[in-house]
Amino acid sequence: MSIEVRDLSFRYGPRQALESVSFNLVAGQLNALLGPNGAGKSTLYALLTQLYAVQSGEILIAGEPISRQPRALKRALGVVFQQSTLDLDLSVLQNLEYHGALHGLSARDVRHRAQELLERMGLDDRLSDSIRSLNGGHRRRVEIARALLHQPSILLLDEATVGLDTAARQSINQHVRDLCRSRDLTVLWATHLIEEIAPHDPVLILHQGRIHADASAEEICTAHGVPTLADAFAQITAPQEVKACS
Ligand code: ADP
Ligand code: MG
Image 1 (cartoon, rainbow, N blue to C red):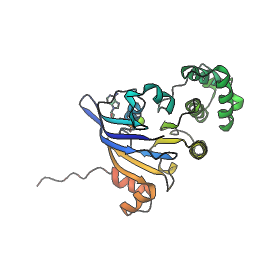
Image 2 (cartoon, rainbow, N blue to C red):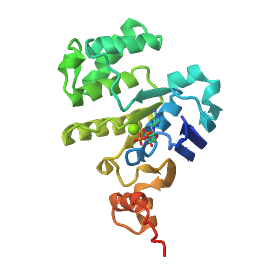
Image 3 (cartoon, helix red, strand yellow):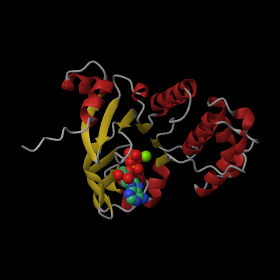
């Protein structure tokens, strides 16, 4: 499913968080959104999920502005926010059931799908455990399973693997890539961990509220004449030299 952002700007009072941001997500692929802290990534997620109303510009899903299709949007999107939104005192299954009910799924469907998703995440033996008893990596997996429960065609992940160890990060990353291939899932993957990005991945680099690069990781390297995406990222996000007054 296509998702298109056109000339999107957003401000918190006097603070400009996004400025004329435009891009198309590549369908069925992991689209990386790379940006340092404060770049505007979470603001963009809040707009994509209609947590915030668009102030200026447009967000189109399958060619239609999101404001005109709230229900279709809810079905199309799965989202994992930067801050966990799991209820710590409820069990894994209860958290999923609650989400399923919000999406109008029957208890039977939820159980069936939860079992399948958690099995893939290696968590099917934890269904009755409280979230509190799970480690950070496992909580993230539960959040991703929950986001996929209603079978969205677009998955939005805001720094979903930050704070996890390398093994947990790699396994979640691989799982999401498998879903892109097997289910034609379109993913927007916000991160500041460059090692999560593969050479062919479409990459958006957001810095100070603006898009500074929109191409595959290798194309960005070539355009900047550097061997790695980390080098290109450092070049793009380097503080501007302050010219001395003379
Ligand atoms: P990122 O997720 O890339 O770290 P954010 O979208 O959280 O960036 O923040 C973008 C900018 O907007 C930052 O300058 C941040 O301080 C500011 N900002 C974010 N949320 C708020 C808010 N609720 N009120 C005021 N400013 C905010
Ligand atoms: Mg953020």
